Image (cartoon, rainbow, N blue to C red; front, side, top):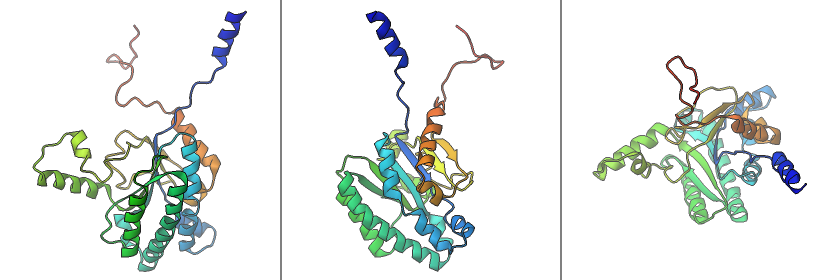
Length: 255
């Protein structure tokens, strides 16, 4: 009877659910979300940034260790001065909140991208948040702010040349602004846009891509959609270029 019980117990044990170590979001659709509701476009940005801390805590509680948000690209400077100025003030207010969040949850914060064009008070706050949270070990939150993937790679190439170094993948990564981050396992883009838009090109090399129809303010406040991203990732078969061998006709070889 003991053997039967042990066998039955092993059969009913659930296999561990695979979760991404690093999930990255392209936060798209704020203005369309507002337009659909008859609201001023800027209110979409406010709605889109309103729940970051709760979303981060939810994913980290389920085993995700790094959460990245693409919130402002190098191309976004082409928007109106009114919108850009509004966003800079919004980012400043959000990062001020994140300072307390980092302390409370033992989180490390990274802000990647050039700070040259940011308002001084925002650039200073980015520096302060990174320095204050640098030794925290409870997980990593990344904001890509004034970020462009091609520019990051070019800067890294020039830095390696200036050092007179030949590089391989491993050493080249040390020159990247994102070099200390884990590779992205799952990238999620909202608002039915099917492109990566110059986002973390090096870290996306083997990422699973998930494009969702919901606008970002809908996703950021909906736990059911958060669960959907993890469920979808768990269904993916990640082979990294490997997998079972096939013959020239495409049939799997049977041993």
